[in-house]
Image (cartoon, helix red, strand yellow):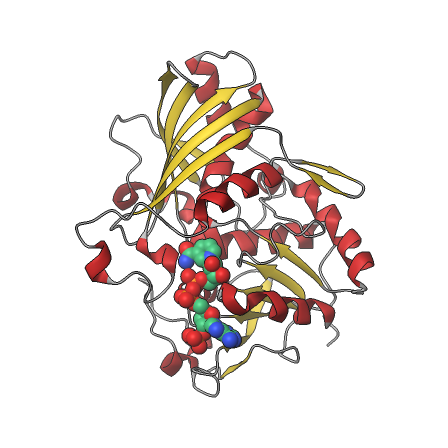
Length: 353
Ligand code: NAP
């Protein structure tokens, strides 16, 4: 029997991606959709301004949008809630026994909440028993995935950390408009333009990267000691965040070794063949003018980080460009992969009926 799941914030940019990716999922069955008062009581097909390039799944069209409150059918709640409201709603669901897989920033840096990238830190799920003990939750929990730029970046950093160690990364993002949700950035602000500021984003990239690459011990995660410095910009691209990265490795390595470490990267989700896992979590493209959002975003069904332009840097050691799908690997796809990892580890709440 499939595991019944709900999507909170189902009408937004990330919520729609959840609905798309959960359609036909081998383990999870989408049974409930929730959103704000604006949408509650309406058919999903009427409440949602569907913006994806595949038709709205038939099974979702007639579901009635419900309030984002415990009592929804399902044992998992995939949260694509606006961060302005996500914090207490997610806590209420976890306290009521749901496994909450969140995209929102609210709990990512809580000391007892795992910030997961299954290829990088699958052992951080050990924070869940700590969280339950600390918060008095019996079967529920909150597990989070990183912000969309961090998700793209950290998949490319992890193989370098594993092979050579990492001392520092200086990154500049070129982030798609869908990263700001729907309707998001006004067209008058972004068409023919680059906006050199995204509130809170640089701090998220810096702190989330170090937590994900950090070390779990019995009482928490010690962040990785590397330095991370970020500049975040918004560009007129519909989907796909590009990151220009300069890195200093822990030891010297040849260009061939760096390329090989990225190409050869495989981890727990690949070994376990989790349904949403990409075969190659990092795809290396060699043409001088790649990766490009328009051409490379759909590689590995949007679940890989696509790395190109790997070259020596006179100042920092190495530099490269990495591209990731912000609403798939950077959001809904990441949450679903987290749930698959937790299922493989036997950590999901049981369905009672
Ligand atoms: P969005 O398009 O603005 O969607 C927000 C969703 O939250 C909508 O479904 C909205 O429902 C719902 N909502 C708002 N207030 C609510 C309330 N009081 N109660 C219940 N539901 C409420 O935003 P998004 O881009 O999908 O982002 C969703 C979350 O994921 C955010 O926390 C964001 O930071 C994070 N995230 C986004 C991306 C990305 O690439 N877009 C990537 C990673 C993480 P209504 O339609 O009914 O108002």
